[in-house]
Image 1 (cartoon, rainbow, N blue to C red):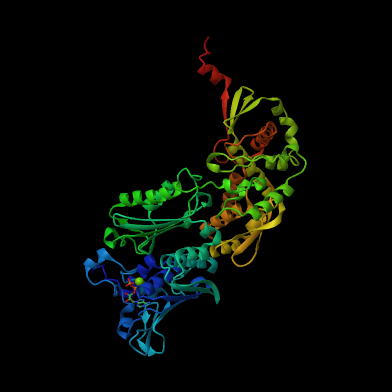
Image 2: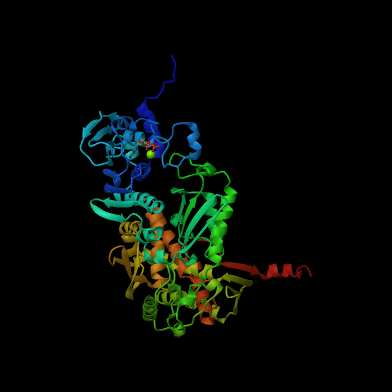
Length: 607
Ligand code: ADP
Ligand code: MG
């Protein structure tokens, strides 16, 4: 007896659904694309419980008649391509004819639709492949699709759904992408009866970015465009100083379709090279237009990957457009600050540069949060180094935090007596018992801060200081959700953050250990990290990643001149950290050269 059997339709649809419909957000993406293909100018998206309970999409597009409705759930049913030649010049968002069939196989779906030329609407249900008749009903012109209880007959898939909050973050992201690519669309997104976004059609992309990502990002964007060799490109670029810890804010669109493309992303990275820290990601919005014949979107079921016919050409065009704009712009961030308020040069980062008022507040709170004891901490000097990147001036964080609880100091008092020398404002050379050491000042201070934070966290929360005034900043919905789901982590770190109006948070307290870091910039970066990691990652790893970031941000930078006391303090702390730290962490902080080695190098051995 033969073993091969042809799968029935619903089985085929469910397998296809595995590729296209990963989670509620995939449903939202597919349905929005269908509405756009139907010429809708106005779309309302209603979501309940992160889309686990309900996704309802109401559009004012061309609609479907009774005959179309009867076919809409059939696999490979599409009105968008007829012959294979069409595949090379796809202008619609959809064409594979598998979205509705897939969604209908994994949820309880109702489609109600009416075309312009009739007075009556029709409706059809599909409950996990179990289809009803098409029936007449009342309804407006356009289409309403309701998707309830996704995966309810597929417990194995349902199990992989995250919390409603996390699923909603993914949905918001899909809506954001559509909203950016289609500025003419009037889009409303509601969650559990509350309005998340209301985006008016014809707003212009900059206004959209402002609504979706906040004013400070939007108003600081550099804008450029170019058309050459069949490609038109419009780019909105954030300045290097606004670069982020994750690549999430790199939005690429090709003919109004959000794409992820490694060639283009690489070109973006190249364009910003040398203008920002290498491990960061610039914030960019790139809108590319080219003939659909010049690339293939039919590479992956979700159509976010494309294959360019001439990827090298695209790479060099993207690189050139962005690079030209960046090099033609004054990106000096320190230069804007009036000298009298520049105690806190590090403040001018995050999304956009700080305002004068904020700088003054920051300077005052810096002043009052400084421990009064150590005399060298009264120094307010200001230095601008490479590329106008401001660097912190002193090491009081390590002085302030290590003095009270580290009685082992006397033992290492001998460091004081030893000679040390800073070279290139980055390394400290000092004599050791059997040779000499080269210390990387940034790596060492980073390590010290990290160990001190780990130690403190084992004892409880990080001790924090109340800022003189709350530092408020705008957040995206995704960031807000990330904050709400990880409040405890903030408490642990001694960071008190509170809502401060719509889409605004304010930092109230900040850990004393990190007072070299800018509170707003730090919290924003932390939120980005949390958004990126979503709720999926384990707490322990998350904490260590945040500590890593914190240590790096608050540590003395390379290129920064140190006083004798500062060096001496750093070297004292080095001893303690090296004796107490359990886990070796990160790159080396110290290189050691023995006399023996020197003698060998100078060919003194053997004489
Ligand atoms: P595709 O979009 O790849 O054609 P889908 O399964 O997403 O396949 O949709 C199947 C067909 O149903 C579409 O080709 C279109 O004719 C019709 N359709 C789906 N959604 C809508 C809508 N919101 N308005 C009008 N027609 C729609
Ligand atoms: Mg479709």
